[in-house]
Length: 110
Image (cartoon, rainbow, N blue to C red; front, side, top):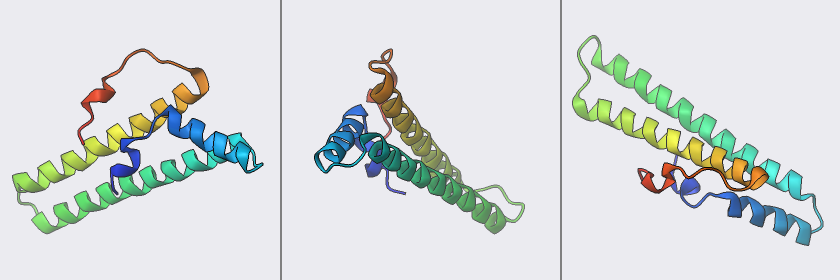
C-alpha cells in the first residue's frame, strides 16, 4: 500500500468530492461515502498485507529470532498504517463536525 494515497487527505478532499458530485448532479453524501469506503477498504487490504508479511517472516525464521531489519520493516509498515487510518478518521470527523482540537498530524512519518 502506498502512503501517498493518504498524504494529502483532509477534510478539504472530502469537501471537494462533495462539491464535484453537486456539479455533476449526483448526491454529495453518497460521493463522500464512496470515497471513504474505498479508502477504508484500502486500509483493510493494507492491514492484511502487514499481517501476511509478519506470518511469512515468522515462518521463514523458524524459531530463530527475526533479523532486526525484518522487525523494523514490520513496525514501520504498522506505524504508517496507523497514521493513514488516523488521517482518514480525522478527515471524516472534520468534514462532518468542523475543527477538532489540534493534533500531531504535522508529525506524520512519511
